[in-house]
Length: 134
Image (tube, rainbow, N blue to C red):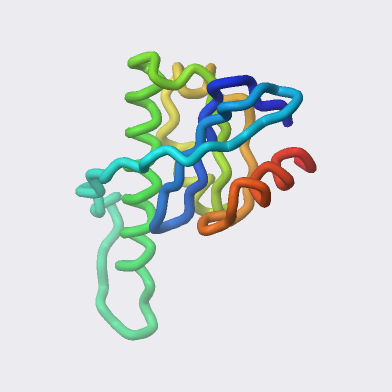
């Protein structure tokens, strides 16, 4: 997958967001870390009932879904505002599925690619290697 200069790579799981910007070019990409925002994850009521028990993971799943929705909202806003022209999303498979539900049309147009892999906590060379092999 080619990353044009300035492309943003969002690496996401159910709890974290890491952002990188390609400060190199397509031939020699260099992922430079960008400070991740503090997200508003207030939407933890996605219409599901919350029943509390030790065997029920609904509360945890609602938190992860709210995080994915908050990441998508933040990305939508920054694509619409013109801060992000080209975007690549690398996310844990379930998180990526939830994020897709919240993609707006401008984000879809800016999306250069997606990779369903959990690489949060990885390093830029590991992320680049995964993107090259995608």
